[in-house]
Image (cartoon, rainbow, N blue to C red; front, side, top):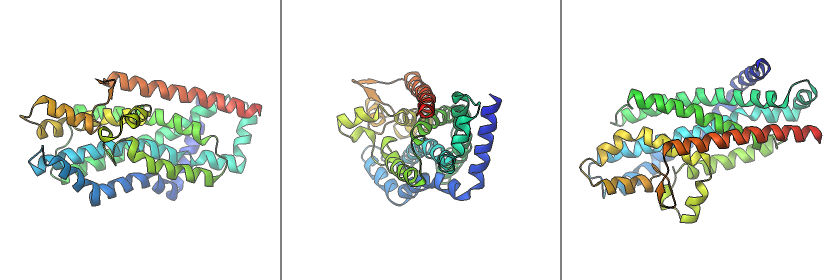
Length: 292
């Protein structure tokens, strides 16, 4: 374990020394926020006008909805950005030194995943604070202390699972060009799988079933349930429960499989299981790489 911690510490120091890498790890989040401020925000608020007559309540609903998605998007993009050091190590031949050392494969994988987890958690907490400040400046309310604690806990889980997934994928890259291409692809798609660009409920059924396979979709749903408790209650106060339920489905606050809403424990279990599976596959990947 000490070996893994030393590798993690080394990787974190390398990442934060490179200010360009730090900036680009935030880039996708900045793009989503920019698009929301310039275009998406007004579109979402207008779409809500028919059911939420109070524009302030509609804005509060939209702001909490988008910021919950941003938090999950950051969990993916920040951990991916932190893994640039893995590609650099591969390019410079440092990974070969690791492979021929007495290091166990699980220690090496754990060291990289821990470093990406640390980076993701730090940036996630920063984005959380910024998102709350943004919501308050726009006339919304701060999240409750209990919900905030749950949000921060969810960030820890999301970041760990996405760190394992990103490590597995990035371990196949040998050049910065391949890594940059993949990062661009993820940055483009992340807004769709987290339901930021297009609400999940308006997608075709086959696409909705596909995105249910993506752990980030479940993470976004849980985050929205925690982040939007106040805005949902305010927006649909006095309205029929069916209306609030339908909006929850359309906007990805709740996810449904075969007509039944998925519970938070079920979605958390899915995120945890897939994260553990990616970790095991990463170890197998390095064992296979050594054999080759």
